[in-house]
Length: 144
Image (cartoon, rainbow, N blue to C red; front, top):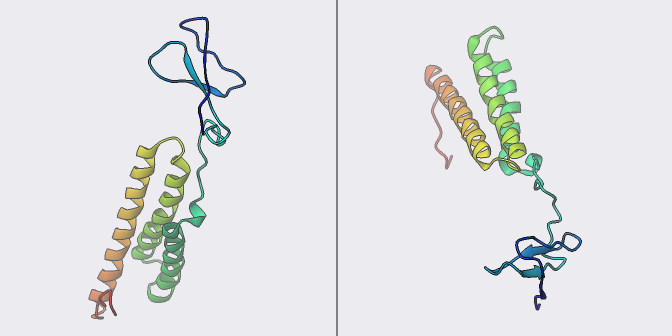
């Protein structure tokens, strides 16, 4: 595809023809007309928030549901561990969703929330390991 360029008479002002031009090169008067493929069709803020399609969110949702079931079955409902485990599972799921929603405006926030989710799920894993140890049950390896 060949690029079309044109000269603008006024130096120091940007010329925009129907929002399809952008400045190129060092010359104050060289512009490039964007093709339809080069135009920003997503708008100022890119699309975001498709967290329900993320494999990590889907797994975290299953972990949350399983944790609720597990704690209801194996713990007294007034046991403090129930609240901690369910909250850790919920935090993992929710922070993945919030990180995905924040990704459009701040990659730093997305990374921070993803790390919070990871830490919450790690805390939950330790709680499950504690349960197995205190019940004198074997801890299965990943290949089991």
